[in-house]
Image (tube, rainbow, N blue to C red; front, side, top):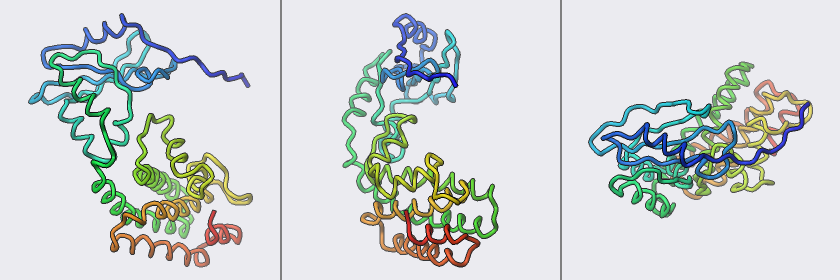
Amino acid sequence: MHDVQKQQAISLSDEFLHDLVQELDHEHIVGITLGGSYARGTATEYSDVDLACFWREGVKPPLKRFLYRQNRLISIKMTSVTEIRQMLKRPQSAMLFASGSHRLLLDKDGSVARLLAEIEAFRWEDLELEVNAQVSLWMMLKAEDVQKVLREFQQENAPGLALVITHLVAELTLLTALCHRTLITSDSTYYRQIQEAAGLDSAWTRAHRISTGLAAGPQGIAPLRARGIAVLHLYRETLVFARPVMQPEHLAIAEQVLRVVQSAAERLPFTEEEQRWLKNGM
């Protein structure tokens, strides 16, 4: 195997950025920003160049587009100041957007600079009610996916189990991020940031690492089945974080589905080792 060395961050020349702005600018554009790894100073040779083109209010922005320039992938989000302001009012999109770095490349009327100042001033406290409501509702809704995991175990349907694990892990990761009011820096740091928020040695993180395939389950349990059992533990551990903000009717469903999981340990085709792990936890 070849030795893999960490590569120094790559930057973009002012000339390169100037040429991009000149290429993309037209009468309907009010501003352009650079985001992502190039704005953070962490880009590598395979990083794409994230640009946001802000369109005038009243003009519907077109779909996202991509270009290659100087062998770099240019990712261009077509948006507006109003659209980004609306994103900052929604917990899920705010979590992914508010912590990003943004370099102002073009600002014809000052509106984009004002928007960047609003992003910089973002506070979770302003979305407290929305965050708590989303966590409560979605913890209840994910009870259905927990039962789907049990169903796929019962039917010994490996493809179905793999699919529902993927969906459930994604939602529980997001909900845990919201419970801890985590602002995500990038896709590359997403899992790490949330594991740190939950506690690197916590039961939640141990379940998360196994359910995502980052770590192996107990010896003697096949990898996919280990991920399936781990995601059931992940739901339980996510409920620990979510319980204080959940509405009683939502919490009742979440707690009932955990009782169903416990009773399933002896009713479904689990080995003795799998039964012990499912019943006794991480």
